[in-house]
Image 1 (tube, rainbow, N blue to C red):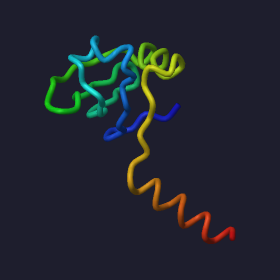
Image 2 (tube, rainbow, N blue to C red; image 1 turned 180 degrees about the vertical axis):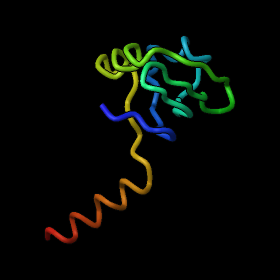
Image 3 (cartoon, rainbow, N blue to C red; image 1 turned 90 degrees about the horizontal axis):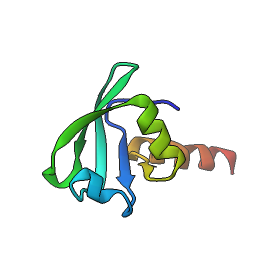
Image 4 (tube, rainbow, N blue to C red; image 1 turned 30 degrees about the vertical axis):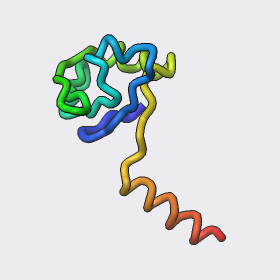
Length: 82
């Protein structure tokens, strides 16, 4: 799993209550052990161990939202293949 600053995740409805009812979470810093993040809609910020972030991803409580650059790159690769 590659964690980068600016990575955005959608929070599933089942755990939104644990994140101030925010619908998204954006990584603002990663030091290899912990992740600092901001919550969407200006609902706050926080940090968590990377192990917990991995657990939330594994349980599908968080889903990565592809950024526009990644989407454009995938489209360009598809055009080159076809």
